[in-house]
Image: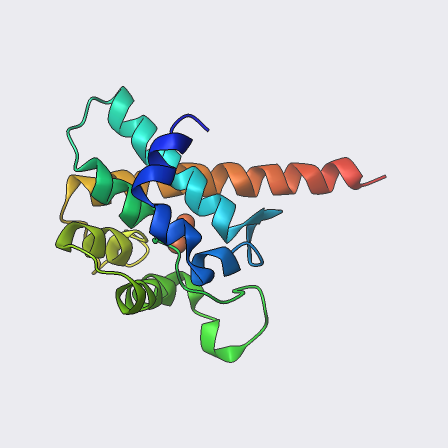
Length: 156
Ligand SMILES: [Fe+2]
Ligand SMILES: [Fe+2]
């Protein structure tokens, strides 16, 4: 991971929190945990900002990205209340993150709008939010494809 040192420095308190550590237990896509996914998405945000030479508030970019999937449950478990996970988890992640950390406007917007355009009304308002939206889709697609490939590998 290219930006691990920077992410660890700016997100130290988030990464060390019990809540964030608990996301190691939750699967996101394929065999990737929510914790690992959140780190990869954060790294991808920084890579996109570097490659596209986009000026950002890097600390906010890191902290918003680390917390974007801070919904804190296993969304694969068949329970009624999180059937609409795709539509509802951004709001839940924001509430959880606000209860635990102090977030600025940029970070709040990043978390709330990261599922745009699935959540059509949660429009990103900052360039950090647009970067997160894009990075999340790239990383999620790669994780899902890799999961499907692994399944095929195991087939006789
Ligand atoms: Fe998400
Ligand atoms: Fe995500």
